Length: 137
Image (cartoon, rainbow, N blue to C red):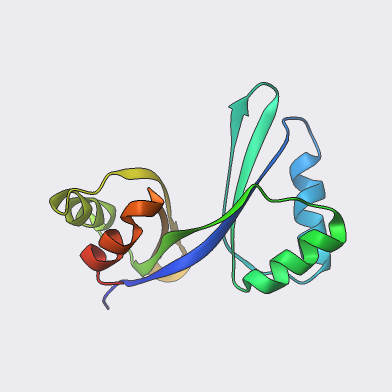
């Protein structure tokens, strides 16, 4: 099975880096029925954390955020990969981008049940078209 690679909209929010903040954010999305394809959260310093989300339905996420009083910093695009897990899956994607002269700004990959893997790739927005082309998205 070939990897499925597509452009996705992602959003991010900054929250205080303390217990319960992620829960509050995620609970508001759950209550609104928002399904996430990807979530990445990490500390950014100064007592703050960043939460990046890729929603299945961007309009539903924006509606839920507005209702909950959540203000996203940006709506940008990334590349979302789903495929069959195998040794070197991520290395193969990284090689294709490297060969095209594209720097991976950030990435998050994980294996899922049933032998699959998923990955979110962030590149500079100016490089998104070239990255999509290099990966066949």
